[in-house]
Length: 257
Ligand code: 13P
Image (cartoon, rainbow, N blue to C red; front, side, top):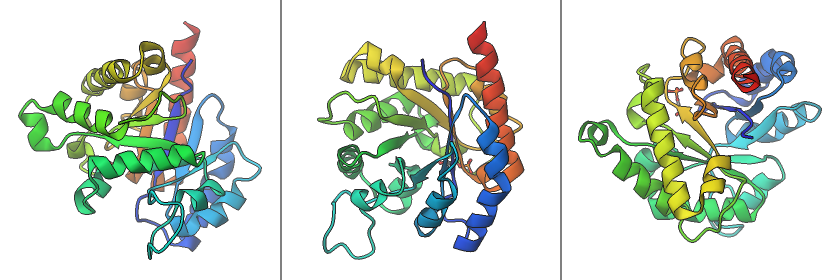
């Protein structure tokens, strides 16, 4: 059974002071919600403080990126070993990393391997750009990104995949539930081809891109969609709690049928 999963990607937002305030605002209400795995991904500089704040809670912590080497002369980088003391998850291959910072499929593959080798669970992001979508190339792009990211990796169960179409990120133009479902089903086909059917059915696959409390129900009510990677809306405590509440309620209801 795939446990629903909602993660907040705060991106490059919140100072350390603001981040602590945001956690205080959402902590109790978020912690009370059962049946959903809840993950916060604040900026690196807040990981230590938030790790301490979440000690007695059921809320988990993730980083937004990392380098693939364990240690050494890589000025300014953060290693999987450093993160492994603080978090359980790490977002890898986010489209903002791919397009603003030149991360290639090969780099993403090295990072996925390094995360897994250091007990971090990758939240691997894949997604096509608008022109690729319009040219009918979505499946080709997703196939390439998933296959390359998991190249020469043995089947693992501690991996989450997020389908985030680039055209839906931060634009207010979310994909439809049907569009997201179709691509997520396709990702399961790719995983079946790469690994096997049972692992493809067990891994959680999320939707991300302009998710809010107003549209989460559209995604979460599809059995194929296991949760969401939330950007902007995860920076508002009430909004994020509401998204997680709806996910718990809807997945709980559809499961008991
Ligand atoms: P928005 O929810 O702000 O569109 O961002 C989505 C995202 O990129 C999450 O990783």
